[in-house]
Image 1 (cartoon, one colour):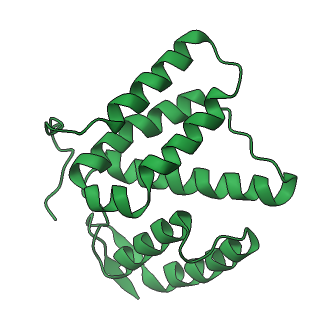
Image 2 (spheres, rainbow, N blue to C red; image 1 turned 180 degrees about the horizontal axis):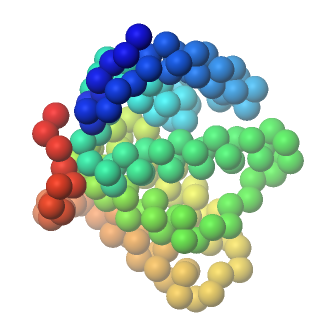
Image 3 (cartoon, rainbow, N blue to C red; image 1 turned 45 degrees about the vertical axis):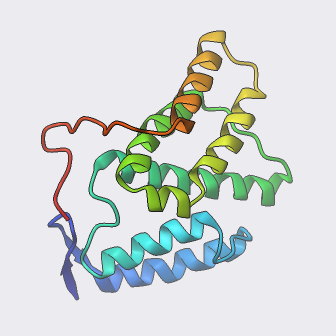
Length: 165
């Protein structure tokens, strides 16, 4: 069965449903429960796609959700396989921090629902526990502090970046 998603793309809902069933088993294998933010992001994205709508309406928020879910899964796999969690990718973390600003401004309910601030704090602590060049350390701390501040001004829209829901 075909469905037109919220972004105007054709979605094969039968294949998507099969993929969700497989992915659901992966969650269980990594001890990711149904109330875990990784599961919730993926489930909400799946349900949104199946209903033909977008979960978020801008690229940066979408990127933040994908990145956070992917990192959460990666860290849970480490915990399962190595019994230890290590995160050492400052460039990726800075991208997540940057994109998360859009999620916080445009979709504060999702930012809160998926505990972005708490999860970002964990990622920053893990990253800052590594030996980093001072420049990265300062950039991460600054970006994290900016994200924690109350966002009082809207992020300027880039041409063609936002779509109407």
